[in-house]
Image 1: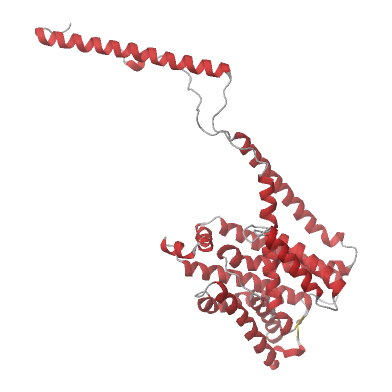
Image 2 (image 1 turned 90 degrees about the vertical axis):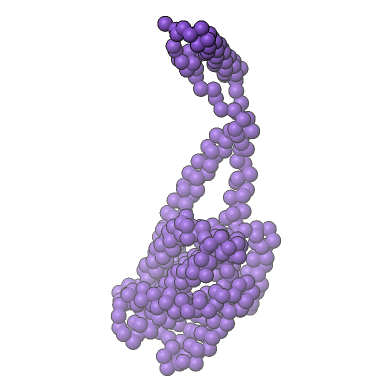
Length: 399
């Protein structure tokens, strides 16, 4: 006997209904990703062209300063962006990186670029005990500890004049020979800063998409709940703290090689650490390129304010007003705020898939055909069951 499935007429699968149709939104997301990629490519090309677009050596030196700000902000963002810990003392790691390069090249005579890497590694190792001590506190207490570290290092490096040069400063040997003129040095250091920023952004991106990054973001949202869920919060914080110190010290060492002179008052300045926080908050600490955008905008504004009001402290007032505007109107930063505006134009998903009259008629016909086939199969099955019961009663089997 044929089975019920053999009697059923093959029918096309009915289109799914009752599910949100987000095809328009998905197309919007694809276009947005392409737009981001295109905008990023244009930004990279323009950044690489700056040395050849700058009209003079002074503008090129300003570009190097802004690039150094971006490197500092990206290095700081490993801690601030992932864990939410606001450190105003990250100038300690940039200053240590600068002095490490200067002391290694002066007292050992090794290659400045080798000294740059070795100094950053040494600062990262030094950050381990500092992190073990400071990461046990949170919030305002962590901020105070980070500020205290900067002040301690400032006093130590000012007093230890026999090694650090004290208030008179310490000269850093140039990594290039005398045949390389100052404008060409600006170009080389600018490209080196871009390379450092690119490497740091790649590392940040890899962490952001890893299980380690997910644990760090859980710490940022609610550290107690993250620890209750099994996240090793202290170990995660310590690892990212050391990574942040490493990249910040690299930026500080590279700046020391470019500037050529170190002063403890400038190297271990709370204001420098505040600039890192301001730039990252302005651009958006939770986004990949937020600190870079913030460094470009705030760094350029700083240079303009210093040029206009360098003899006074008005440039600090202007920066404070800029930060207040961002906190009041764009608390997540410029980049997240702009993305939020763009996402407002994203087509909303429809609750039910729209069907044409022809599609609806075809679907109803398919359903009716399936029902008729099932009814016929059920009737035949019932007839067979009655026939078997009758033969069992009379003791005669079916032929």
